[in-house]
Amino acid sequence: MKSKIQLLIILITFCTYNTYGQITTEIIDVLVNNQTTVSNCSLIDLEDNSNISLTIYFKLTKPSNQALGTTNVKALLKYSNSSSGDDKGNYTVQSNSWGNNDTEFYGQIPISVSENEIQVNSSSIFIKSITDSGVESNSCEYSLEKDEVPSFSLSPTSTTVSCGNSSPKTFTVTPSNIPSGASVEYQWNVGNGWQDTSGNNVSNFTTTTSSVTLVPFAYPPNNVRVTPVLDGDNYPQLTSTVSLGNFNPSFLEITGNDNVCDSEIYSIVNLPNNVSILGHGSSNNSIATATLDTSSGEITVNKVSDGIITLTVILQNSCSQNFTLTKEIEIGIPTSVFNASIAGNSSVCQGQSYTYTLNSANHPCAGSIVWSVSSNLNIVSQNSNSVTITKNPFSTEYAGEITASFSGSTIEIKKGVWVGVPSNDGLTIQKIGSYNLYAGQWSKLRARYIPLTYESNDLLNITFEWQIPNSMIRNYADTAYKDVKPRSSGQLNIGVRVNCECGNGEWRYRLFDVDGGNGNGGGVLIPVGGN
Image 1 (cartoon, rainbow, N blue to C red):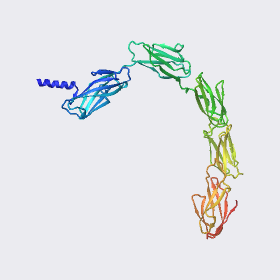
Image 2: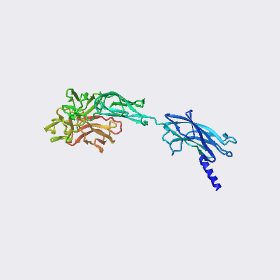
Image 3: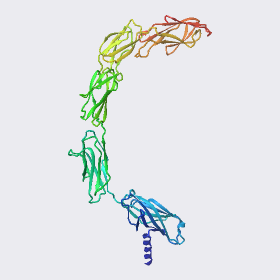
Image 4: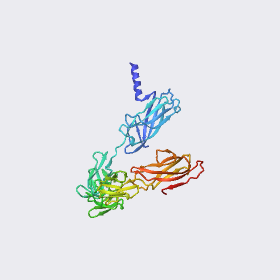
């Protein structure tokens, strides 16, 4: 029975002194801000200090017959009961720091603690010793506490007021940590531009309530400032910054037609009383001009030429804030958006009549249509959207053009056509390579036809027909080319003509001298029947 009691006493003693491996760690006392000493693991109060300095005096105890290596002593800050502690400072005890018969070692660790580190009521500091063999020993804990300082905040911290808008604005002070039974009042300084909800102008006034509602009447009104007074003591002044909100009347627009054929009137519908037209203009006065009637607020746009403009109107409110409205307007018939075309055959042959039709000409500014044709064509009949034509039998021009013009506009729709058969004007025969032809040798010839054309003409769709006597001939898929091997020397008259949808054109001849074949002769190109 006695041995059990002795064992129980040993266990109780071990737990009471927080001893691990016969090492005991104790905090003797803590010096706060070099002024106050706190002992016996008591409460350390930060009061209203934002930071405090602590000097922790500690003692390590070991049995007299136990040797220790290096021991690291740490000062730890716990945020809560569940945290293990953050290292705030340390002290290293070397093995030779202990005397031969010493069982106690004394030291101190200076640390600092900020009020921001004291997050919960159970925050505390303690020290931990760790031997080089890993044996740990903790001291008791000193609880940390900070005073809750009264404070005030104002919301909103900033606000905007729209020009001319008299919607009320509420400003609220939120007090914190106010002692029970304390007297609090609020001294407001709102400058100029505010009224109370009864319509009275206010500037400086005092309330016992923490919230006020103000109505703006000048824009922008002054910032709202308030000084809280707690038991006669003034606290720092709080400010809510007041500024003008953006002027963005997105509900406004320029109303009027999207097209101006001659002249149109535009306006801003439902323009507020505190908003006026500061400026206006056309993006291109060479296409259209814009004129403002200041009495009615209407803008007249007059056509100058065909194209597209942007009509701009600058609005200004009574607070001198500007906002720009724009509207894109088609003036007359802009070529960039007008996709009308003339449909019909690409060739006009002798003795036949052809009808051409104007498609996609449904523009609101498209007036009456006037048809015209080039001199090698004749108009048989015409109406608002079609024309019937024939070839002029007295003209030899191969390229022709049909034009549809719109009255009151510079817009013209054109279609190029090929008329009749090509004459031999513009038709040539060329020898590729050396100038001469030689009997018994191959030479390459090329026919070229380059008539006068209009920009609206399609690409030529023609072939060439050749007359090459007394020669061997090699053909190409492209009929403009021929290989020729004259059978004998002398003169060789070669002809070519153009074939098209309407038939065959006129022949064009070229007379060549053919050398005997030794390659040293001098052939001469002699045109026949033309230049």
